[in-house]
Image (cartoon, rainbow, N blue to C red; front, side, top):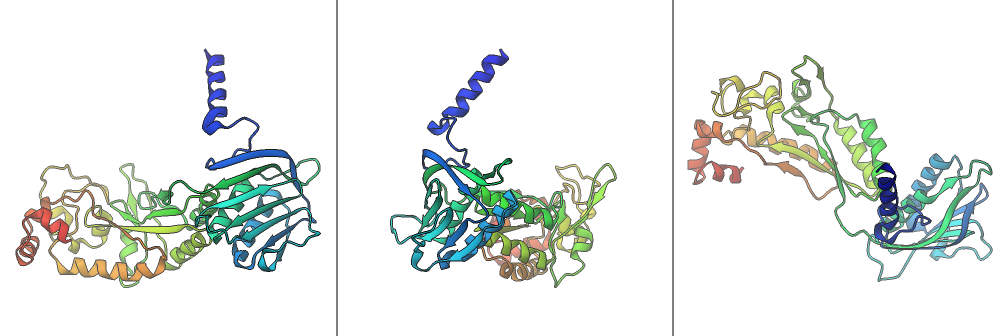
Length: 363
């Protein structure tokens, strides 16, 4: 039984997208890949040529190659994408004028004495370097850097290729996020969704409300354990800037009006009632743990102070992130507290809204 299963797994692995076992393993699978004879061999004397427009991508590639193989190769800028005629044993990042190449598309040819990338954009060139890094390795005996020879023409199938990290539930230190960014880029992810607030933790500094992270960044467990952590705005600038250099956009998420338990632990005046515990039990059992599932955990839909607070939060955070998107949650909003809240009812009447769902839409 186990032998049969092993045979089936080997067959399946060698049959994905028409792959044979002797083809280089590249993730994600390229649109077109063909293997040629020979091996690319790079030594300490090898050079990395690059078009001036691709200087940042060439620099990152050189640094990653050194981390991966222990060898630092020389970087040489070339005008008009012209590699010297007598050059050998080199890698070249060239800007292409080929209009048929999409923004994220690239053509990569790996030969016995060189590897050449042609792309019409910086992001396409960057993705090529990540493909080549997957097939380069250092020979333990000779110490040279080598790769099988192949040709790739590739372009991502999906424009949005994202991964979500959730430091709101369990804090992820800045150093770990910075370590993960190059790993995302290696497999051509281009979106890092950063979930910064939820019932279990508020993980971002807001300068207008300096005491906010003091209480809202702590998570308390039923076991008695606690942990905390939050990102300063300088932390987030560093994360967003590094991600941008790897062609990854960071999408920040601030949850409102639901999923706001941690915020209301620090700012109970944002609830419909004076304190969270003043809300009578309705349909959900109340927990004692901070940031747990509480009845009416949604921010008040009527108080102007709540809307002003959110305006202040977004005004501080939006300039930090170069992305065109900001995720504001708005899901799983409990409205039981709104139904019993005078401020919410006054807001509904003032704005001529139909009911609680209308208030949710207004929010």
